[in-house]
Length: 354
Image 1: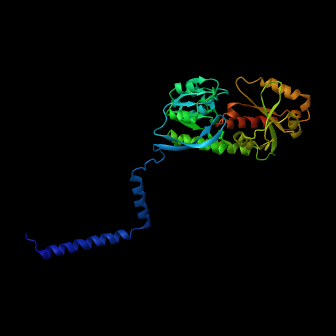
Image 2 (image 1 turned 120 degrees about the vertical axis):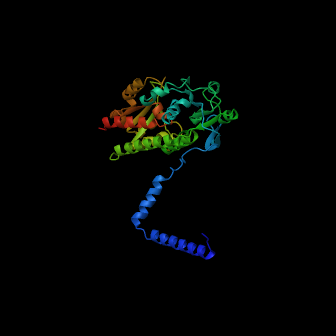
């Protein structure tokens, strides 16, 4: 059959009119139909790509220390990949990595001065112990780590130090100083956990862990919401027969945590040594101590405090209000401080002021 140009033009015009009619019908569809169409499209689309992943190289803002006990100065650490071999310079730092699911990355831990909580005990037992005391640089470097982390004031070349930040970095070993150890608060703890989540690409674990800690913090606050503020003083367990008082002036992390129980430092703002006479005059409601592996006999020290004739006018002595925390749960600069605060709160509630 032969097609003329007029026939072709007419057919094209007819097809155009049919398409226009179809579009008009589609534009008058009901809102319900439009919703159904959109929903179906969403359900059949490909899942969104997970963007909560670390992109390497990763730059982390951290610190170095200028000399033993010196000034903290900002220093970045660049990670080309997630660390595979990690040394923690304290027990508490190692336990934090366990909580983040990183036990298999640990090649060394030191400073076992506190008790290990049951929920991490099995994992902790898998980590090589470089030293039960503070560990030196030689043993740390001998473990061939690609990251050393933990308490900042232990990054020194002294016998008790893991080596300086600059020295370790020069050996291509990255470092991470816990900021809880530098004018720290509980917010510093959350920040440390978030940064470790980035470094090891375990952000989801870090977020879940942090939320669990914040839930515990809220519960502690709620447990004392109807109670008045009380004062405390911290006794350093130097010997069983002496009274050594710390003003805790620079211990911001511990003070922030104690504040959850509405506890106020008696010697807030006091610089230098605190005498026994100042302690008696200040008359705190509570006395606090910490026990550590190798510490003097804490029970004997408490007995001596209660029996000391010079202290009998103090509220803490008269009301039997002395409380002991585990070293790692107070001076570990990790999440374990909440364990200590919760325990202390329970003991105080069981032994109310008279």
